[in-house]
Amino acid sequence: MMNTVGIDKMSFFVPPYFLEMDELASARQVEPAKLHIGIGQDQMAVSPASQDIVTLAANAAADILTEADKAAIDMVIVGTESSIDESKASAVIVHGLLDIQPFARSIEIKEACYGATAGLQLAKNHVQQHPDRKVLVIASDIAKYGLASGGEPTQGAGAVAMLVSANPSLLALHNDEVSLSQDIYDFWRPTGQTYPSVDGKFSNETYINAFARVWEEYKTRTNLDFQDFSALAFHTPYTKMGKKALLPVLEGHADQERLMSRYEEGIVYNRRVGNLYTGSLYLSLLSLLENSRALSAGDRLGLFSYGSGTVAEFYSAELMPGFEQALLTEKHQAMLENREALDISAYEAMFSETLDLEQEKSFQDQTPFSVCEIKDGIRHYKK
Ligand code: CAA
Image 1 (cartoon, rainbow, N blue to C red):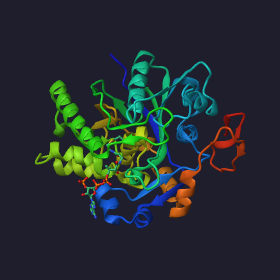
Image 2 (image 1 turned 45 degrees about the vertical axis):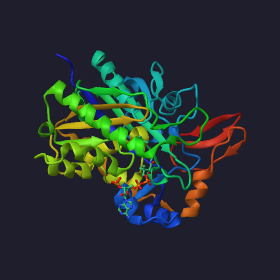
Image 3 (image 1 turned 135 degrees about the vertical axis):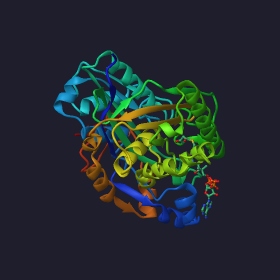
Image 4 (image 1 turned 90 degrees about the horizontal axis):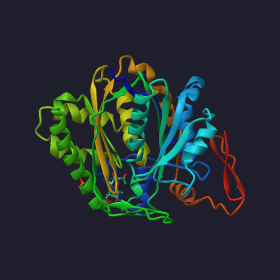
């Protein structure tokens, strides 16, 4: 019989700064209700120049790794669409910062916000073949659309780390994934372009249609339906997005009220962080696990991953006995509470500060992993 394989531990990290949506609304002269209700965002995480996808990833993973885990990790996979190098994988740097045993494979996966889900599937397959080994999967991104751009209220930054093992403490991953690839341009970022090109309305439509198609195919292949799920978690570019995709399919169904209540529990953290791109679905999963009182061991959860361009995927996972003990709820809530609120000018200054590899510079950032110096065209990290 195949071993149970899944997420043994998971954590997230967000930079220690945020912008209130009320502050943004007043600066951009839009109604606060448009951002709170229309978009569904209350705050957004802002990353200083000294925190990049490598340090966000290392800080998220450091929370969950013991020395025994580091000795058992065969692969470090970073899913990202805000890569800092066209060649070298950020996972190689993360592997070094975390002192993971040397005989490991370290790679970066790209397909917009879907990349970490591909990483998770790869990790699951690897551990199914090698049940005594583990894989570290990290989703890490900084979502930036530009000051005063249409996408500005849907920015964010942070990372989610997941340790995949046999006999997991949190979630067993089922082998029931259904994926969908479509070659379209709803959101993309050609090499060298600072901010993405985005067709906002089209991206909403493709997300909604991709969910409907993947869900229909999933139902046909598995014979499962909404009543078989205790909760559904969605990729959450902004918290209203998943609702816009789920409601038309769920409307009038007996499970509507129950699943929409779980949906709200799954966006508590996302409302305060914004878009994490690759990490967004997994932040929503953590939000659900850490904020819902309605879940119990044995429950089936559905996860919808969406990466523009596009690849979408739906799969399910089962909650393990004692999963509550494997969560870092208090730590995560304290991290969100202890962030510093920026006013609009501090946000704009932080947003505009970029790392120029041709200019030597040093940083004094107290965060455990952060960029400490730019020298000889290389980012140097403090651990
Ligand atoms: N009170 C309450 N609601 C209000 C309001 C008010 N005063 N004013 C406006 N609204 C509502 C609107 O009715 C609208 O609701 P619906 O979506 O239900 O129709 C909502 O607020 C948004 O209003 P607009 O459509 O006018 O918003 P916009 O033109 O500013 O665009 C956006 C919104 C398209 C999401 C834009 O922020 C954007 O382009 N974001 C980036 C792209 C994105 O996130 N796409 C999501 C799918 S792609 C994906 O998932 C991958 C990824 O991570 C990027």
